[in-house]
Amino acid sequence: MKPFGYVAAKDSEHAVALLAEYGQGAKVLAGGTDLLADMKFTPHPPPEVVVDISRAADLKGIALTDAGLRIGALTTHSEIVHSAVVHQVAPALADAAVVIGAVQTRNLGTIGGNLMTCVPSMDSGPTLLAFEALVTIAGPSGRRTIPLSDLFVAPRKTSLAVGELLVEVIVPKANLYKPTAFQKFGLRKGQALALVNAAASFWTSEGLFSEPRIALGAVAPTVIRAPKAEAYLSGRPVSEEAMAEAGRIAATEAKPITDFRASADYRRDLVAVLVKRALAGAWDRATPNQKELAS
Amino acid sequence: MKHRGRGLASMWYPVGFTGYANPSGAVVKVNEDGTAVVLTGTVETGQGSLGVLGQIAAEALGLAPNDIHIISGDTDTCPMDTGAIASRTTYITGNAVRIAAEKARDILFEVAAEMLGVKPNMLEAKDHKIQVQSFPSRNVAIADVSSRAHNGIGTPPIGSATWNPPMVPMDPETGQGKPFGTYVYATQIAEVDVDDETGEVEVLRVTASHDCGTAINPMLVEGQIDGGVYMGLGFALYEEILFDKAGKQINCNLTNYIMPTTLDMPAIDEDIVENYDHTGPFGAKAVGEPSLVPTAPAITNAIYDAVGVRITALPATAERVLAAIKAKRAREQKQIPA
Image 1: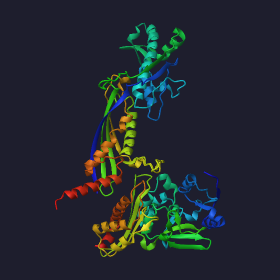
Image 2: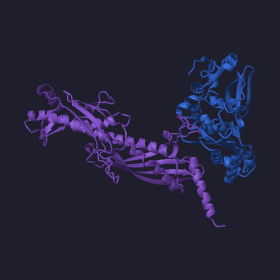
Image 3: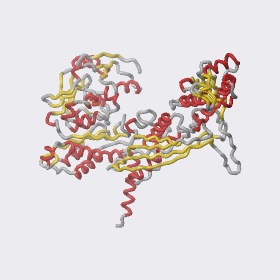
Image 4: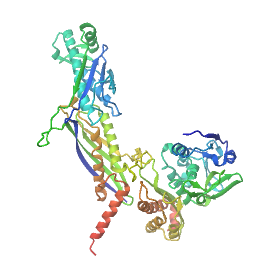
């Protein structure tokens, strides 16, 4: 590894000041699982300075607030896996966190880092998109909150401006307890990159799909929603056939690539299967009360 | 939907090639304190071969394995060994160590015979003692015998030996002969679940039944079987070296050359079938490489049992299995008369 500068931030305010000071030359260090691999194994020069935010206590923690479920950007995947409140209000987040990398990666890697690295196969993205999560961004001119979908621009590229910092992820209050499920398919069970991952959520109203949300990973330049499949389900009676058809429609919305891991056609096949299974998983997660309302 | 299937595969595997020279040498010396040193050219690579060689020397000398100090892998100071290859170490190096230890022991017998007033061929080495066969109360400690051999008689107990499986040239007319010293046999049964929508194969359990001759160290034999099943699993379902058009490997590191993880491992029932082989040290043959030979065919047979498709190119990745399932469905569709 080539030499690089290092500075540690006390809190998020300090981090934003440091990012403003160093501008283009700064890289944020959270868990370091992506950054260190990048600095070691890619030929481009190292950042001028690494801004270590891992000590910023105000970026940590999982809590219910007036806005919904607030997950600090520095929260590790393991903390999400073991969070009682996550299991209560949004258990699909834990399903997605528990299949990231290996135990060591999950102990170090953070939800903010996973989102900000912005690879299309990230496992945090689809579930959060299905929950219509928001993200709070801090910058020199203060804080702003945007939909997570507006964060993703391209592979390894987010919409954040130079000097901005991802502070927290919020699952809106209205979507807590929304039946949601996550599915991942990799080439093996442990330490696997997703060939395809998918999440689905929906409410039910008088037996009909209501506000269905479907998100796909690893099959487009960023994690994406599948709006045609969502539109197909909306207002349709809940059934296995409808779930399967939504999967087939989502497969047409995916734009996967062929590489040495799998062909585009196979990835499309997987989209259809994983979306169907995610929808079925969400339905399994619906409480008896929710199901009764649906029947 | 998941389909359960079971598949079986059997193999034989040759041990100790005889077509060209395949020797191992060993030197065994018994020290004045009744411990012993073994010099061997073979190399421990984690398989436990030095533990087995120590047990062989200990058994031949009437000592315990922790009395044996092994010096290995230095070609300047140790006798020649063809290599830690071909599942040959227990069988061939083991025979060299056994014979060298017996030669050192025979020197101890000469000395002890005089001390006990019997003929050397009436003695046996056991439990750190040289004793009269059938009269174990008439004995002397090996340490005392060795000390007397070194300092009294002047015959330090040192043995050296080489062993080479008997070389049998092939008949130039028929190409027939006896190409190997001995053979081992094994059968493995794999139990799998195949997902007919994704093609994913999950290996749930492998039962591995192996003839290894005498199992000198049963836990090491089980460990070798576990490792072989792991490699066979990788061969069957995951591992593949891929090249680009220029012949450069695409997947040359552990993030993209897919090997199974602990989460992918099935439960393994190791079954040792002991079968004394008179050509091996204390009847032992081999288990190393043979342990991975039947795994992949057992798994592909289990896939056939589960979903009715024959996988003829490895690894049987989920994508390949799904393609085979789709091709089978298309064939069946065609056969339905209009």
